[in-house]
Image (tube, rainbow, N blue to C red; front, side, top):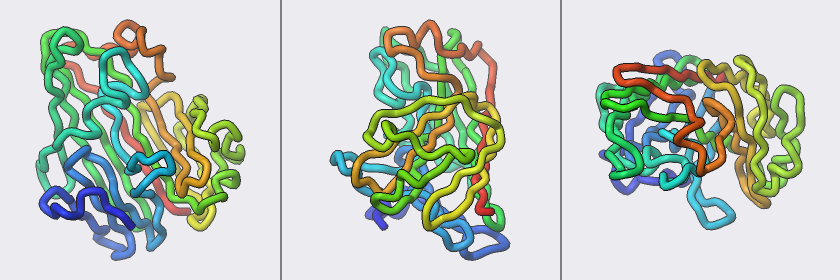
Length: 245
């Protein structure tokens, strides 16, 4: 399996469950995302090449999911360097984009491994002087054999046909969800703070993206006015748990 930044081990945060050596993950400090996740020995998340020539790894989208006027697609956090705070916590501060997005956003991500689960807690803080729009998401690439994406189910509903063709589908999101993915089996996906989700893949891809989002993505030119505003000094917390059942 390709791990995106393995040539530079100092950028990789490796974690292992205290109760199960078969539950482990790797976090790349470049992008703050998960490049490897095994739950009870099952490879749950994919990292590697995409059929369109891009690279895939499960990453946070901060401060925007999808396109937003004059901001990088899915936000700059997924490509910037994060700082290791302790054995399972990393942090990132967004640089000001002059005349586009003021300074102030800080994010921390805490990763906890259980016996057959991972918990990811993302805290967004506004340390600046302006109300700041944020619509965060987690771009999860679930590992799925080629030609099996059609058999993925979210809460009993088959993966959308258009989503298999790289046309993202957006749907309401429950706090407790059941995913069914070939070779992995059933996963419990519990979230808080997320109110919508996208599902997406590509022809001949080895992944199915199932991505919780704070809200449905606004039109790119309306992001700054429609996305939820975080006031100076305020904090909001997003959490998800993926568990093999």
